[in-house]
Image (cartoon, rainbow over all chains, first blue to last red; front, side):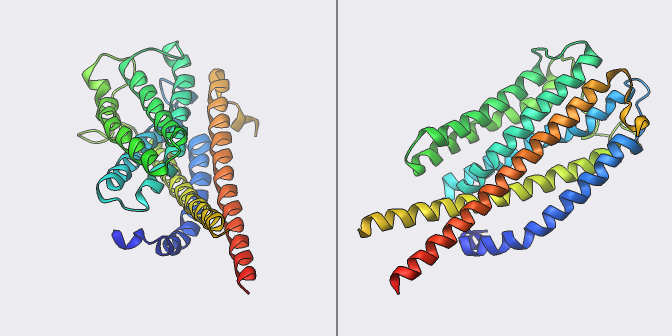
Length: 240
Length: 55
């Protein structure tokens, strides 16, 4: 892993991955949307409203997956001082925050016709809202501390402490009484959803993953270039 | 087309979910890509300027 700590090597790898991730993203979104809006059947209880699931569930999964990427990269940055680790963590935070906000927003719009309310302070929704605040806190720390090394360290500690919220989100529907339904895809004993609904769900899941990889690589490359420019400008000032 | 757009009594919720999600996804995608291209161009210009000065 350390051999990819070299920015030039990372750039070469990113340039090789980007066309593929972009291509997979475009195809998966096109096919996923067709499946979600046209090909999949309405639910026998929820009717057409079930189609919100095809964007809500992948957004919610991604909010947790991106947080684990952010926390793992923060851990690597803190322990092994891997040069690209804090860049990866910093680059993934806005994307993770976006997925979390979308999960809350689409969940709220799904909740109104199904539960009769946009919001309820139950365990699942509240813990996901805390996840959103963790993302905001992480980004705020990076912005509020001028010294980049200190900012990286403070943000990494927050990210690692925040991991405690991930199992709370996952198991909140089992540990507490909530109006949110229990797990129906990633559960012991297999999914309880019909295959005709699993196809659009997993296609959108692939699309959201490819989207994250594409954006992560663009943002990491931009962050690397920003740091290079900063160093070049500092050297210029020192040279004068 | 009308059949595709008609999502029953709760269609406002469905189309609002899809609309806002894809608006946000596309906006973040474009912003990330533009920042990447802008900084790539900037660093190339700075390198070229430095080379020019060294000559």
